[in-house]
Length: 258
Image 1 (cartoon, rainbow, N blue to C red):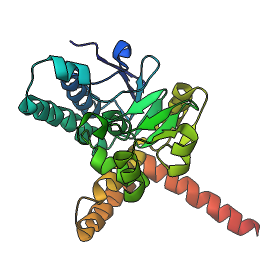
Image 2: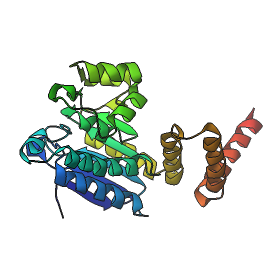
Image 3: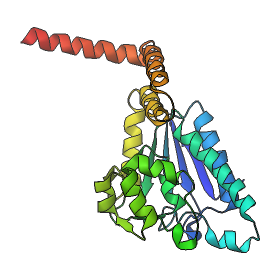
Image 4: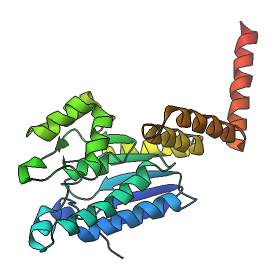
């Protein structure tokens, strides 16, 4: 088994770590296969209620490994095939009913933006930086960047990153909505976020994530129907009934105290 991406499942949390620090966690062909494998494993494990994505070393991800692409002798067909493999992993995580939190540090570049944006909540170190750089090497966006980036920050701002050689600081990324918050210890803070999901109505958080992530890709009426079915199923769960009853009781007490 490749160790380019590590997976550890413990107490309901799937901890996924990009693990090519010497290459700034840039994706090569082998790592792409491992990404898809890990995504499938994490989201199919019934014990997993949340996913934490982070990276070893000084950078989160420098995107695709351009050196490997240039020296492998591979043609565009092989690059396309690998992109599709990685895309399967991205689609698996994004459309799953497991909420994902990412902890990022250092450089997040090119396809690294797409990997980061598989997360529903991103915690960044104050020194993190975010840049496209696709066009600088004559390449085009992949790994979901052309879809996930404008969904996160809007089309105009996404084009500023893709069409100009612009790098965002962590503070700018926070202002743009690319990340949710900054923390000196992003890994520790990301664990706190994941723990809040796992300590609450875990399944409800996961379904809320799934509804939002899949909503833009289908007709409005279909989304409404999915919402109706999902909330009905949630209402029948023990976790929901307990929490709804507690909320109702507290509400009644407040009314009686007035």
